[in-house]
Image 1 (cartoon, rainbow, N blue to C red):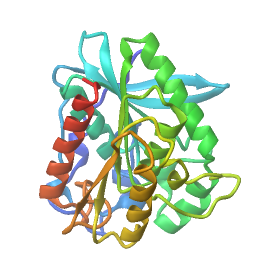
Image 2: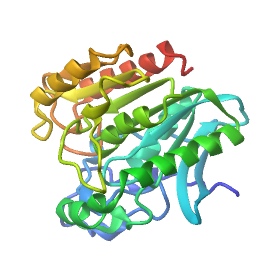
Image 3: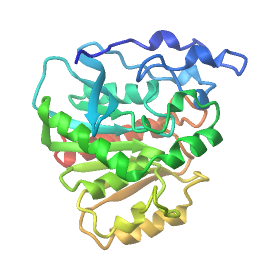
Length: 294
């Protein structure tokens, strides 16, 4: 299927968007363009935009058990036998920020795939606030479904120029938690980088396990990038996870940024901390390279 390619830079205002701006103007018109309604207003001054020069970038479609799953794909143009990075979104889905992260990986020589993991539950870009987004979509998205969709991305990568022996995963917030879980689910991964993903929590049929349950038995080395001021992820939960990881042999570790809270990598949000985001990005690339995802 042909890729749909669109430069989303024109969707950004030159100054910070206010609540007075018509939010419909900034909803995504295709996967990886625009920003989710619940994430507005966007702090446009700090938004990083990575162009598509030298890349093949746009939307592909996978058939997963009869369900069409869209995936934002970015990779060096005309190249094959590429290392692969799965990019897992926050609760806002695959909007412009996540697509840009995929392009950043592609500029580094990776085949990057960012799947729409909420497609069966709804479109997170259209939900006006975080509370409703959590209630109507996130809380109804089963971990097992997510693992299956990521498995489908791996299969597509293997068949389309990706080197399955050099594969990693990274994710942010909700996607950070998924990163830990997928590292446990797929031991063939070489490495993972989890950005401020929850480690503990209640279990139910939708989320039957939490990352801490797998700390001692993980086979995939995971780098956790977290903020000390994150009100949603207490530091004692990181200590609990460190204790579990110490029982294993992956060398998984944490970097905790004392001046950051949650979502410090999200350059479109007020929570963005540029210095820590840049340091975390460098550490992520180094982590993948040092573990053979290169």
